[in-house]
Image 1 (tube, rainbow, N blue to C red):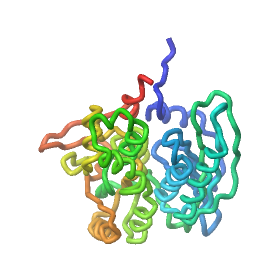
Image 2: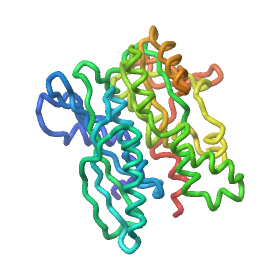
Image 3: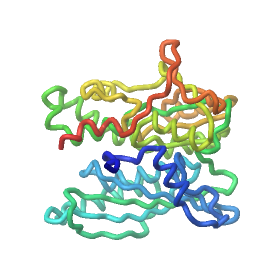
Length: 340
């Protein structure tokens, strides 16, 4: 019987095989093309590069427009570029779409574009058969100087690994939004409201995090961990750069609300959807400066590990004991919704 994939991103190894087999084209202006761990494509335009990204949003239906802009902008910023132009393909559910829903979606798009100084410059909108909720496929374009972009494949042996904010930020907001009715029997409304507000504080956006780090200097690679959580994001960096990683598990920042929700649902925070955090590998001479400048902007950041030679593998140290970095074949958040 042929393998059936669960909901979520394809397993890293399978995606790598597919891209290696089927990626096509030989245009030498494509400086960064499709690959595991690469947040966006980079195309040369001489002194400038165009950075292009597409990502769908299927959760957070009440704020899906706002969400789509920020999630796509994160991947542009993780390449060291500035997000500038956004297009959206908006697929709406048959029998459920109302003018109020459409206005809400476009109001969210407009709000997020205004926040990040992005121009909404095109797209497509339709009511689509077979959907039970809106889906937005976003396309974000950005730009950078030709010598100023970075990619996950540029991580260097000896780099320190820095994580901003904390893990499972996105999961915290999604769970509180999607499961509010059942969680109110366990958690207070104030707690759940705090969790829902994780979309904006500490927030899903890492555009400011990336800008400050790039402006400070010493950044070799950045990556936006999303589905599969921090562990998958780290694995993707290692695959892209062909390096090993030593992660200090005792240093991983888990904020109180993500910790409480992950414990409630028996989720491992390391494998739980993680937008809102930015992973970067940096020259150790710059790490303190980057952390201090982020702190001055009210963005916490922590050194969580070190890039190692490839033969070291991917290891995590907890309470002085080394072990393999955990692998998640699907995002932990899937456990919550699998029975629906």
